[in-house]
Image 1: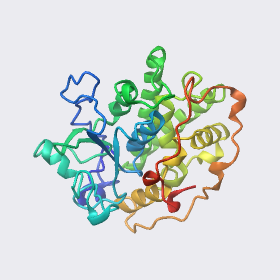
Image 2: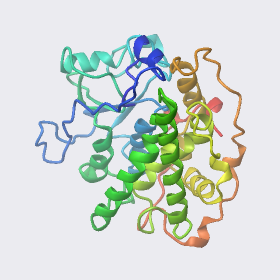
Image 3: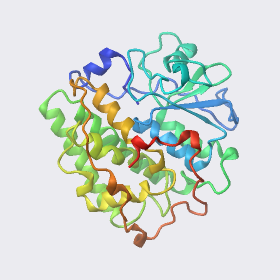
Image 4: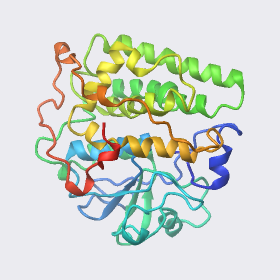
Length: 342
């Protein structure tokens, strides 16, 4: 997550200081030709995520759709940080079993001492050296789709088809500015005018997306692409945290017929809903952002049963995986615990 640096000051400052999304500081790329010094290699790297974080969840979904589970191992951080950032308290002895570290910040420190910015997820760590390779959340998923192809599963979908990349980039940029990042600008606003402008922008873009998705099953083309992954991770959190916690409350996702059906369609597609942990999502936002929610009380709602209701979007056609196939079952060790499932 771009700005959640895990420090007590950072968390309590939310809603009290001006919000700006930090740029990724470590932008090396893991590529097929290894031009940045990091060649694609099975088993060499570890993807560190929080299931609470929408930016990290993009990488989790992409990894699963592409079948990279055996090639790129997964570390899941506790959704509630302490003053040293994302921590591995979900693992035995409070240490990541592969990297041997207690905090993600240790991998950052091994790469660069005194680096600017916070400790963010997703992050890819080089297992042999224990050093952070990249925290570039915008590029990681694109590279998984295009640079890791030799390690994709048989039947993996093309999430970033060359012929559609310009349109995918345009749609994703609009979604990022007004929706992915817009909900944060609204939630962390420090003044009424700032909040109202951001909130209005969120709903203007959602209405634009609803008009587009009323005509077609997916955002770009007739298959799932990177654009859908980027929108889904915000929509799946909308009613649970953004509507109330971030005050994006003109209407709920469940009140928009098109977007609610679209979100359910993706949620019910293997690789999407089976990666979502609502317990982690709610506990992170409501307990970490103490500048917004000083009591740290986590609400009981919303009712999640509707995520499994029929969506009816098959009538629009489309082929979720194109010429490919759905991913197989979730590896047992990566299954979302019952408390987090819809």
